[in-house]
Image 1 (spheres, rainbow, N blue to C red):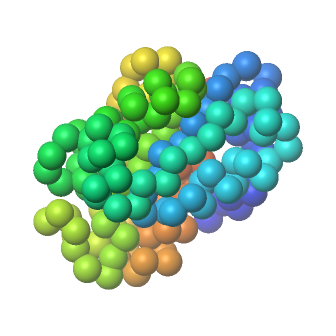
Image 2: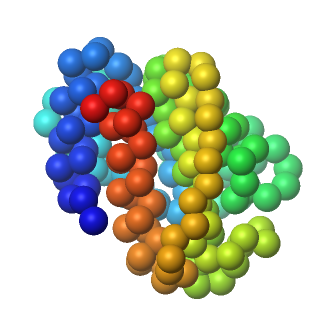
Image 3: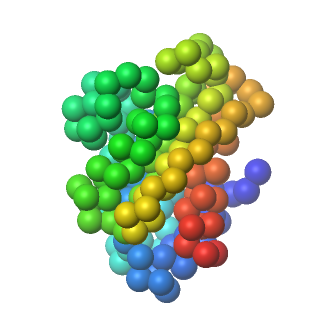
Length: 155
């Protein structure tokens, strides 16, 4: 596993250099990714903020997630798109998943949906962790979120 602090520092360097404005929308990670980014050097230059929408009613109400499952592609796409507008960011990562140990929305534990809105273009993908243990799922999701941001920044 890569060190989240080092990944966040790398994100910070590239975001600052490229003049990007980043935001995060988290569900199962409960603010871990926002915390990593906020703690990185120079974050006040590029980090617009984040939304932690843990509860499904918050996702539907505040973020415009369509009725239905929140561990899904439509959910993370809506989360990323809404946050881009809400926070004035040109790169937004959204994440929602079944953290375990129980399934959620008919998804097995360890299923995590990601979306990135990069200057108005949104893509989504799903990953399945090898473990349904909540702590393992959180660690994996945190790392993969930071890696995805770095990749989209070209770092």
